[in-house]
Length: 134
Image (cartoon, rainbow, N blue to C red; front, side):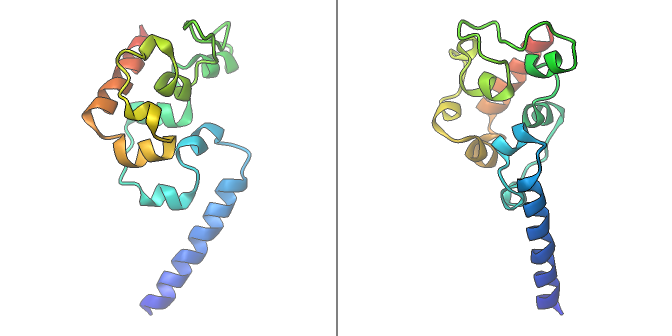
């Protein structure tokens, strides 16, 4: 019985994964969570701020521009890149001084799996979110 349950669980997880991967939505989330198998390997309890970063919704200019609440999707940084969660976490020069090194040396899925709950990364993300709301 337990083998049958495990096989059935795997079957449905594979269907869920195939649907997720082929879906044309959640482009930003897929940068952090490339598959359902990866998501299931995470011990992640996403809070409001982490959810904003995973979905690229909230105070990011690309999102605000898309919903007509910002004139431009571009960041105020010298790079003038689109202001996305990924840009702010890994590239934006406005935050380079405070950025934990792991955010520039690891992939987004690795950051989410191994480093998202560290004090340095949590404080950095909270600081970005706080400055975006000012």
